[in-house]
Length: 453
Image (cartoon, rainbow, N blue to C red; front, side, top):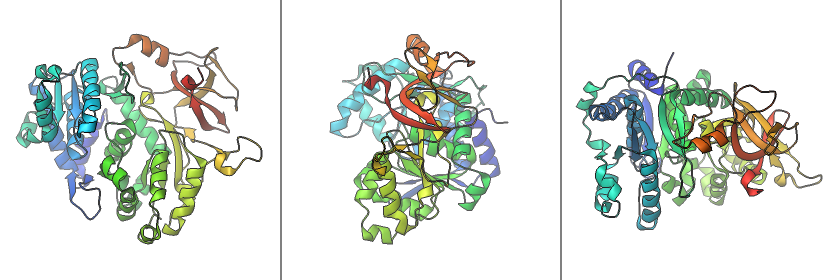
């Protein structure tokens, strides 16, 4: 039995060395430059990064990852896991407008994580060198472009002694507050959540084979949990293939997303609700005539409120291109639970619930599906900390092996968020801070607790 994703990569590199693990659309276009990496090559590159880290005595420390969209991030991330180093994915500074914000956040993350090394792309590392005068913290931290680590270095790699409790990476929650919170995700958390994603999204061996191994198409940022744990790591978990491209290329031309889905015909692809709205704005006859979305099985929608109107319009608009309403897949998750908590049932239309008698269907509440097996979801009164009855709205609490270890070096916040107890239930619960209710087993998310306070 695999103890970590590192073990699984070794297995796939041995048994299917030539299979494409990931392809990157360099321009976002299916007819543009395409970069690919096989499982054998991915194992070599990740081991080279791992050996570089091990040779410098960095096992057990944290590494800041600052890569532009592309395959190099994946090699670096897996290299950290293979070295026993906790990866800290960050947003690379890019463009003048974003530089100040990105630099400010990078400084906070480096300080909070106590990162001992920065791994990045060549351009990012060069840019950081030029910014060192504004960022004195950088002078004390080694920086390396992972492209410059030679393949030969992989020969020195030593397999780390990883357990389920070993820290895999720190996922910093989104937001621009002065006190970032790093969610401590262990190797056990990762494997459990990949199990949940696999089961809830119907990623069976038969389904993967029916799609010739093409599992995901994704433009989602890989430094965010939705883009990393889903498209990148679930692909590795199952030994399949994912097609990736830059969020910027999606935002520039949202039709690239649907063209990639039509071209590669993956089982699963998705994003937040706004992505479906952007795709609808570009849905002219010329686009529709060139698309075939008939093999798209799971169009996941999460990370922000899922709108019934968006689901209806997307299904209606793209039905002529073969899209099926049953592919719409509302889901719910958060970084503190590694990622996925609940998901719809593949192949069945979303569950909609009228919020007021006689209200238009577009205003209905959207069900985000059922919890993964061995994940417990309850609705609790946030003040009394007691379980509420079905249909009553309260705070969503979660328990299971996917729930992360806590917040990095923040005992108070960890105790408040990850250590809740509930009469009648064993074990500790994660307080999500989200509001919702349960109806016939489905979770309906209604808002944020802090918005009421």
